[in-house]
Structure formats: structure tokens, C-alpha cells
Image (cartoon, rainbow, N blue to C red; front, top):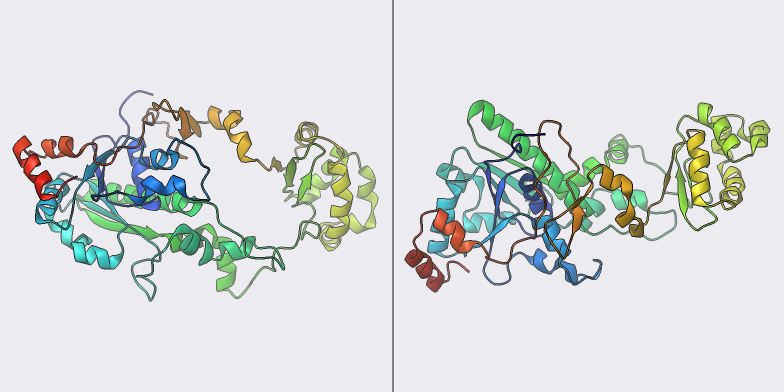
Amino acid sequence: MSGQLPLQGLRVLDLASFIAGPVATTVMGDYGAEVIKIEPPGEGDPQRKLGQAHSIPQHPVNFCWHMTNRNKRSLVLDLKKPEGRAAFDRLVKTADVMVVNFPLKVRARLRMRYSDVAPLNPRLIYASMTGYGEAGPDAEQPGFDSTAFFARSGLLDGLTYEGGPPAFSLPAQGDQMAGMNLFAAISMALLHRERTGEGSEVGTSLHASGLWSNAILAQGALLGSFVAPRPPRTKPRSALANQYRTSDGRWIQLTIVREDKLWPELCQAIERTDLMEDPRFETTEKRRAHATDLAAILDPVFAGRPWPEWKERLRQHEITFGLLGILRDVPDDEQAVANGAVVNTRQEDMPRTISAPIRMSFAPEPVTPGPGPGHGAHTEEILGELGYSAAEIATLRETGAIG
């Protein structure tokens, strides 16, 4: 596909920290936008040290930083100093999109609300990421994906097994999803601007994104309907929507929805056609009522053959199933590579990375990922583009307005 990327020519200011907000600008950069990451003096975005967290795989390459800040330029400004604010205001006038996730009180103190910056650039799209939204009793409550996305939304409750301790969230999973929601909001704002010429304010929150991700269970709760706590695997609600271990130690997820059609096929695939005559399993209702008995029968059956053999048998009978992938599978996943979910980079010490889950027929391939920027690596370059002279930049550095 020839032609330009869909966001080429747009300038995006990324004032967000950690992951959820920056994810939205990462995707914009992947599809052609120029992204300028504005960081404070000192240590900059705390995400630069996220790789040191105990829940993150440890590696000499700061992959957490590179993955979420690839292809961006870094500008260090002290927004509390008049000179730093003046430089920022000049930059805002040239921007198309501004992404923030400052707490609401900090936005007010720094004059970083939409009402503060919109007069500088009426075409600006102001994109806000918060923990719990911008209204209500918890609007000022700090939130991370583990607390706002997973815990508050009921996701962890839905994942918890009966009688067991609460489930744990995975690192940044909610951030990644919330960031895509913010990207969607920005995209609609860009379409609105294309039609009307008007800038606007858009946003999302980790909490709202968690509720949306958990919408089936949450909608039931709105109606006063609640699913029972998740039973142990040996006592499933349905033995045909359950997990089974194979002889080589892998796990298979069965998800048979059309039982009327696929129950006989499964019996043939596992060479247990006698089960079709068992009165306990004659109908879907009876199979559900005797799910524990059926699971006890299927456990040794699946344990009797290795995963590759089950893969062929189940495919042959068009059974809906999936391998419970382990992270060690990811580097060799040909399917991920074939469909562009794993792509090559321009970074020697991190030669492959995860791409945004978007495909478009009308645009060329996304920008090949490069490393995240060093702290303030492009400060002088960006200020020069704004018309600052070398002497003026030196003065800004002397005052501490830039880093």
C-alpha cells in the first residue's frame, strides 16, 4: 500500500506519565503523528523506572519504557517557571492533540485544564485520562489499573474462585486497554474537527474502561443479577467450557457453545462415543446438571494424549478450543508474526516488539518502532523549531526552565 499514514502531519503533545495516557500517543505515533513527550526536570516520567518493579520481568533493556514511548521526542520543561510555561504555550499553538493525566488539582494549579489551553489554540483536541473520571466523590482519588480498572470494576471479583483469595491483576493490562479507549476518543475528535473546524475535549478513565471490559457481568449487576462465584475447575458450571491438562503438561480450554451440534463431534474426537448414550449427558441441561461427573470423565481422557495430537483431533471435528498459552510461547508464535501482532524494530537491543492491534487496508504499514527517547534528548531541537535562538535556549537552561 502506497501513500501516507493516516495521522501524518499531526503534532501530539504527550504530557501523561506511566502507561495509560502514553499508550494513546504511542498508537498515534505508530500511524504517522509527530509525538513530543513533555517531561519534568529531574527524573522525568516515572515510567522510566517501571522496569524495576517486582511484577515486571527483569531485563537489562528498559523495554517498558521503549514499548510505550517508541518514536517519540522528549522535551524537558519546568511548567512551574514562567519561562517554561511560555515555551509550552508557544508549543501548544502548534499542536493538534494534547494528552494529559495530571490529577485534577494539579491541572488547576498548573493551569493545564482544557479551559486554560483552548484559548491558545481553538483547534486543539485535549485528551484526558483519569483514574475514576472527572466528576463524583472519587474524582480526586489517585488510581492505577490495579485499583481503578481491575479492582473497582468487579473484574477481579469475577475472576476469583469460590472460597479462594481475590485474584491479582496483570501488569499494565488495564492501562493498555484504557489507552486504546482514549485513542478512539481522540480519533472521533479529529473526525469532528475535520467536519467542523472545532477543537474539543475528550477523555476516558481507568474505572470506566474496566466497567466496559467487564460489561457483561456489570450489566447483570445493574439488573440485580449476579453470577455465582467461580467454581473450582473440577466442579465446573459446564464441563464443555472448562480446562483440561494434556499428557505433555499443556492445558486446553474447551469452549463449546453449540452443544447440540458439537457434543457428538467431541465424543468422536476423544473416542468415547459411549458417552452419547449415557442418560446423564443426553441434553445440554443434563450435561450441565452432571458437569462434575463429565469433567471427571474428561480429565483422564485429555491426560492420555499430548497437545499436538489433541490439536489435530479437535480441529478435525471442528471443536472450539484453545491452547492456554504461556509467555514462553510468545517468541515463537508464528500466528502473531503472520498477522503483524509482533513486529521488527529499529532497535538493536530490542529487535522485536508488540504492535497496536489495528489493521487498515488504506494505509501503509505503521512506522517501524524505534527506541523511547532519552530524558530531554530533543529539548534544544524542538525549541529551535519553535523559533528560539541558541542564546535564548541557553538562558532557559540557566534559569532551570528546561532540562
